[in-house]
Length: 163
View (tube, rainbow, N blue to C red):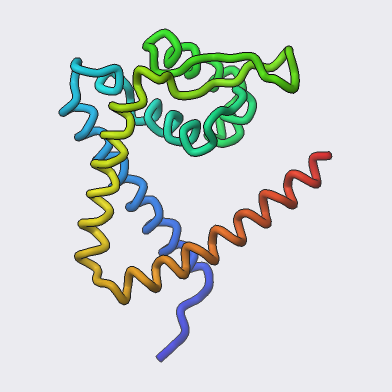
């Protein structure tokens, strides 16, 4: 059997990653629709939820950091943050290390609803891994560990190149 070219393998990985992202986005959209007007989370877009997830993972971030994480311009990230602050989903606080810099974090009032949305997403993934089985799930986790290690190294190198 002929070996599959590297470019085809990369394309498959890329499109499958996109499918996973679409799966997450559909589940977020469904959950936001169910929450509706009962919560600030129900008023958010999928993109705004992605921003909250990135902020939640790190605890707090600057607008510049959020822009880099989301691969958008600093003005776009600033506008996104302004909207989330207006909706009560984020709070701003001055940085302890740099008085000119502002950090943002998830607003305490939104934390419980945000946790519920995350729980629904986790349940969707639990259902997915249940369907693919324990052996495939174990292999997937191992592959993702390796990918994460490579990406972490790339990020580390990119940070050193900027200095």
